[in-house]
Image (cartoon, rainbow, N blue to C red):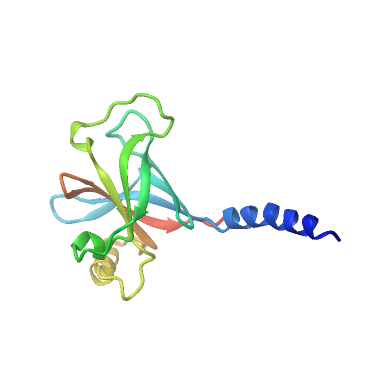
Length: 164
């Protein structure tokens, strides 16, 4: 077989293999009431795809007239902040997923998001999330996705792996 044909076959197969390896998560909105009781709203969610350095969140919340996403997602700079300790990826420049005009609650203007690493026992928030999950009878998440506005978390989503 010609070496050029082998190289071409490799070029065609490698991108397909990479896209098959994408991590996919469904992340329902997780919030608490005035009594500290946590619940999940599956009608509001983030559908999250992570394929290497390509991160694609699709956000469906009642506070916007359309599904949203972010223009950029990148690794969080290790600057010693709490944000850098809790999240490995940050997303900025929220816009509608279809690229067309939309409306949203004013507090979301300038919002950004943090995506945690896969949560293991060394994750700084492992203990509190474990207690919250057990106390509220909510399944322990694989990751978290949090939307921040004015440097404060305003919406948190617990993410669960979706099997292809």
